[in-house]
Amino acid sequence: MIDSGQRDAGTTIYRAEWVLPVSSDPVRDGAVAVSGGSIKAAGPAPDIIKSFPAATLVDFHHAIILPGFVNCHSHFEYSVFRGFLDNLNFGRWLLEFIDFRSRLSAEDYAISSRLGASESVAAGITTVAESMYSGQSVYALKEAGLRAVAFQETFGMDDSRLSETIAALEVRLDELDEQQDQLLEIGIFPHATYTVSAAMYRAVAEMARRRKKKLATHLAESKAESAYIRSGSGVLAMDLREKVGWENLMREPFGVTPVKYLQQWDVYGPDFLAVHCVQVGSPDVEVLAKGGVAIAHCPKSNAKLGCGIAPLHSFLEAGIRVGLGTDSPASSNVMDMFGEMRTAIFLHRGAQRDAAVLDAAECVQIATLGGARALGMDDRIGSLEPGKQADLIAVDMEHSHFTPIYNPYSALVYGASQEDVFFVMVAGRPLYEKKVLLMMDEEKISDQAKAVKEKLWG
Ligand SMILES: [Zn+2]
Image 1: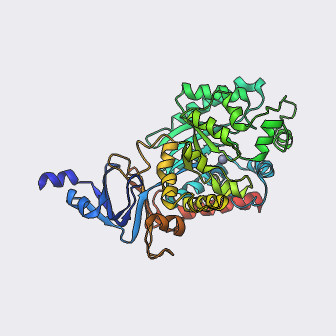
Image 2: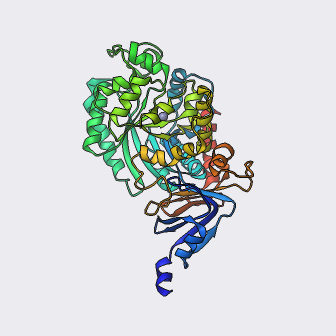
Image 3: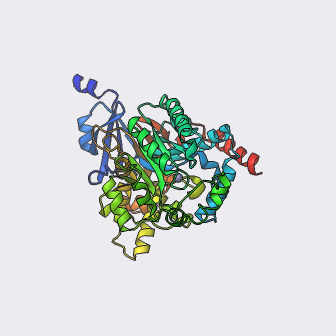
């Protein structure tokens, strides 16, 4: 008994009516044992309690414990922009957005990033693939205690300045790399096919290989992007280039899709995350599958900006790793993975007129383990299995509109929202308990964000 007590010291058992390990079947009256930041066991509560007799027991009762969500695409820095450009198509939205973006100071970006980070924790998101413009997200991610790949964005169409841009990026990455730790990894994010030249994509891909970094890009998001790459026309070819001073640079119609265009610049590989992939046909899906790339599927943002619906079923059939992304609050308004899962299942079933397309369990799988695979982190996170990191959340079903529960996956996807999350843990450290943020001052962040909005827009 003494040995057993010593062995269990520091172990906490979290028990709930349902535990969804995701990698295996749901467990009724389940529990997860956590110690030293990792999961020791997950399964039926009576078995777990018997195995760890000296552990502390936390009983969540009528709740569902599942792995924390992996948000495969976000921009925390744009959280203060939520809801101010709600009715524009992608190209026009981008042009307006560029104007507003330039009005934010470094401090404004820091506040905006904290707003996004605090919202994410409270929404049950434990891992984030964040793309950074100012770089302020890094500090917000660390403050919040989130796990993340923070991608530094880079832009450049003028090849006469290529070496300068690349040198500046190296310096920036050196600085950011100093922030890396067990939870935070730095990646590189060449912004998109219409803001980054072919030569720059090549140079950045070479840099990513050399520095052993993950690479991500916005790809095949809008019809405007397809028009720009295929025929050198449209709002991204004309208006955008004039706005940012690239109108005198030579450009040519490339005559191909954005996916095939990028294929030529040696960027694809298993450490490449393609964000969106809406404007793709079957040959593009083949190229992406062959390239071994992963895709961040952002159904709500794509629908809201009038971009369309990405062929998720084709990605999955081709064996492509797919995760779910909320994109920034500037385009999707709230970073709620429940809403994202719900949007995905309704859009895909509606568009295909087939209720056999996706199911609730698949949605939860994509939002957790699928995202972990897309980011190459499934050896550590994405499911509740012994040896994995203790990144888990608990969702309150007591006040849910989803009573009774026949299937816990259905309850989550069709009935729950971010407000139902009441407990969030990353690497064994609680970040959110009884709906209170432990690492950040929610009220202060909210007041500061409102002040940024008032200062800039009145
Ligand atoms: Zn984005």
